[in-house]
Length: 161
Image (cartoon, rainbow, N blue to C red; front, side, top):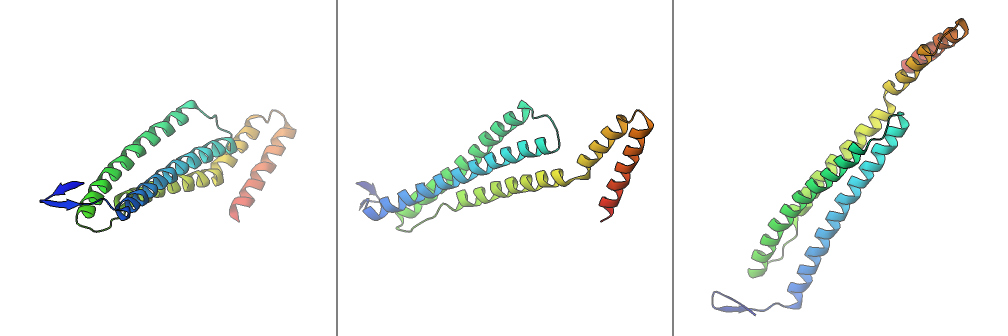
């Protein structure tokens, strides 16, 4: 029993149900953010392989830094939602973790934008340009030079379409 303004406030099963629902929603949101970060990491590794770039440990450290930064945002949102939840429970109103939902939506938008940028990088003509430059550099005789010119012609025709 908790005393508030000389009145007794009982914690009913309804209050406990709301509390558990609130916690389950918040934990689900945290898991969604963590999954989005892991998908972004997987997509970054896939993109690096696709464009034939080296996968560095620096990217993995950046992902860990991102997770810790996101964790702080989610914790702040959870604290705000907890304060609102307690205030609403004292006034016999129900509350949803709105700040956690809002912060999660923002973080998911950031991660989806990152996935979009990875896709643009994979489809970029820079990848093809790297291959063309490699063919030109490796052209040491007339046969290789003709092959390089043919590759450049094929590239120019495909980019016009």
